[in-house]
Amino acid sequence: KKKLIIDVDTGVDDAQAIMVALAAPNVEILGITCCFGNTPLENALKNTLRVLKVCNRLDIPVYRGCSEPLLAKKRQAGDYHGKDGLGEVPDPDAPGLELVQKKKAVNAMIKTVNQNPGEVSLVATAPLTNLAVAVQLDPSFPKKLKALYIMGGNTDSRGNTTVCGEFNFVADPEAAYIVLDRYNCPTYIAPWEFSCSNSLPWSFCEQWLCQNTEKAAFMKKISSLSMKKAQSPEYQKEITEGKGFNSCDTYAMAAAIEDAFITESDEVAVTVELAGTYTRGMMVVDYMELLKKKHKAILMKNVDLEKLKTLFMNSLK
Ligand code: BDR
Image (cartoon, rainbow, N blue to C red; front, top):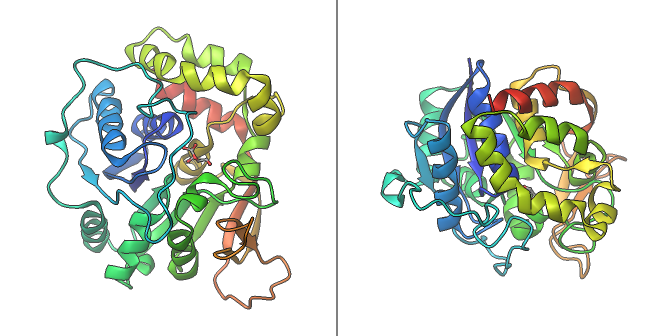
């Protein structure tokens, strides 16, 4: 089985990614570490526990990570995921935060990877703060990972948070910089524009959500607000040019689960702009190899969307 640690800021697409992983028979989730991001850390923890409860997997340890960026001013997340980060459909019987592990996320990451050197992949769908702290605490951590899968960054100057910055990188540019600089394990990145041009057709989303299961009912509820927003003319123009629903975090997850998911990619060194007036937090892609960085990341360009659809369908069965 593929051993995964998942680092999330559970909003709606993180929830979708977690459920895809939970349903995959070839995956063992060793822990879920939470970070601030789409919503404050406490919500991310609560939302993660809600997802695990619906899937009957509260046995998976959930860890508290960073609640603030390393250096950047904390940003108020947008309203795409709703005020609670999970579509504003509260569950009165939601599990309480006493279920969160005492051990902190970064320590848990390091310990788990040290216990399984070379075997664990890390899927990161939040600002990269926890990962940056992990490498500061244990510089040998990245080389003991099997691979790192990141949703974040952008390859053009098309942002979703600032003019040219993607949310996860803009939320903590220094953390993204540290991770791209020091994680020398195989690194796969699902950048923002890539996820936009590989969105899931609306007709598929209907099929996916109309399955007659408790998980589908939950998913339908939590996704409704963000899907409505995604269908509004404003978001369609900005996000997917009207083609469908962009569940960005699930691309990083699918790449970790399915070996042949990525069908076209660029292998190139990347870093993050830390200073620009308009460009702080933007991913810098060194196509001309001017930075002379040895380590290259694999930027997803095209994927087998049918494989993703199958993972999505199975996640609600
Ligand atoms: C990222 O920000 C959030 O909206 C998503 O969860 C994803 O991780 C996209 O920029």
